[in-house]
Length: 145
Length: 145
Length: 79
Length: 79
Image (tube, rainbow over all chains, first blue to last red; front, side):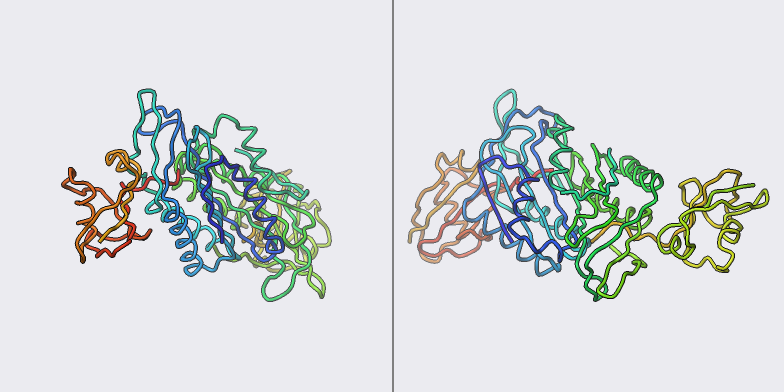
């Protein structure tokens, strides 16, 4: 179970390859891996977005993500989970969030991955500020899942 | 929309990285990517499994996977999908199946990815033969999702 | 008329061959192709059929040159 | 007693500072910390609060040395 908040750009697929290498030997027990990657779009609410600043609450953010990861492990029979979330200055197309869940069975993997994303979006302390052609604006609410 | 049936071992994360590179420019429109990877376990129905042979129906298998990919695109608002399925001789831990779906929104991506996996397991013409300590056996049914 | 028959997985092993050609009367169904192709197997329990690579029922009519495949329940994917 | 106050995102910009210390009477609640920290803002509509990095309601009691954070609805993730 791992949680990472990073201000460096990350490539989700190489993160996953690397994480699985560290967990070598688990693959043959796992069977099912469900992954979600959310990336920065270049549009929002009808406007072109040229850049983004992502703020977080160092300490609370990690604690919250660890809490939901632990809760997912009690609600589903999971082998492991990984959450990576970007902060700082982003460009369109940059990956923002990666949620990966490993389980023996696909039902648990799918459900836990989706649940983690919804919990993350609902309450994890992150805030987005979008850069538009005419100045910047804080995003006021998340889209429902 | 791409479907690949391969008798060569594949690494799902590098397949995804490569596929996304080919589709460069789409990232900033996409927002949400949902992925499922299913790997060969070293146990099934209480027995240790040391190897597996995966048979398919060349032609029909690809047609069926293309059909469900096209159906997913009509049922959900998707940007793209990728299905990779291994055939031939496998070892425990080997990835068997990769299903990836790209969409502007996570709900569509999650739902379509899960639906594709269920349709694949229910009707795509693949058959598994497991190698056990005492001989081999055809797997008779898939686990429900 | 002649139709091409294919077997997969456990059915291929039971039939002893991956493919054969059978002769059936005009207007025959998939069920009659099954009987012609597997004279020793009276029942087709738990057998799926495809005609020209599309799933069909055993009551589906068959035409000259069709490829009729018989196979057990599928077990692809993982997880 | 003294408590540490932190602001994030739009609230940090409105407050003009990411953090400050306020004095509140013993037995004070998060709501009283809010009033002491933001004398010009009468309402806390659409403001979330955390005490020592856990979400709390505005009626939650506060103790000496607590870290009380105020922030707008969160907008993390993507998709």
